[in-house]
Image (cartoon, rainbow, N blue to C red; front, side, top):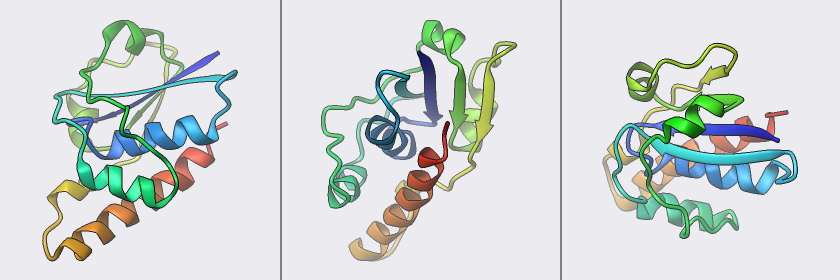
Length: 134
């Protein structure tokens, strides 16, 4: 079984969305999918909302700090922001690493609909990237 770890700053938006899509698109017999952050900020309600719009319930996911045991045993670590890439522990030798470098939708400003559109754009980018994992 391949272990995938999605990491971002607060494990509230981007990595939660990635974990949700990981559970949907990656065969649970082949992949174990988790997400975490260098901090915990709780699950962002807008991330929950835009995922529900796409038929995925992430309400049972939790905002977690990096689990060093899982981190060290992961087959693929994906950082979704520069903060996680720069501040996460040193990636062990032999562990594949991808950096997706996505802006934090939680920092979006404007009307509620404009902010949700930023979340939706981020969701769609993550969705396509997760679907490409093999």
